Image 1 (tube, rainbow over the protein chains, first blue to last red):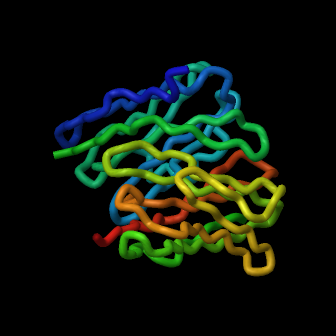
Image 2 (cartoon, each protein chain N blue to C red):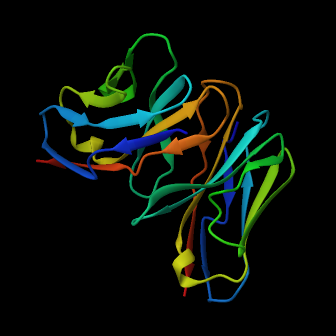
Length: 114
Length: 113
């Protein structure tokens, strides 16, 4: 298995533009997580899905952020409009969703908003 | 509610000396505990996990951690540090009740030559 695949690896965009981050989880995994990593706050859980349904989105910073999981093999995290403070590395992870299972992480998307 | 606290944001040790990275957790239900490592510009990799079996857990690269329920701790140790251990380490807790995964703030480990 290729693991969790995120795209793009790097994104540079201008403030005010829409940004879409993509994630393909490992086949057969039922849970999917979006995290944001910054120097100031470390790793923050933004949202997680179980069986394609958002379970907890309390970590989504504000209405500019939205996430979807239209099917078991694809998820997006969208920021509209983007702001410089959104600059961070965004990680997607998936797990089997059973007790005691580890999460497998993608390589991350480094977002820079200028 | 569950939470995890990594007590040190930075730890520096000399090569060949022991490593101790501290982690305390709180959980309303039986927790599972993990340590992940992140090398510069890389994704996260699982080091080891505790899942209510043996309290002393051995992981990759010579790391181990001991689950101490009375102290609500899950500290990560290694007898002898290597330069390649320089990275950021995250302590993670999940509850067996749901799938939510909570990360600590991370501890950056520096290895001095």
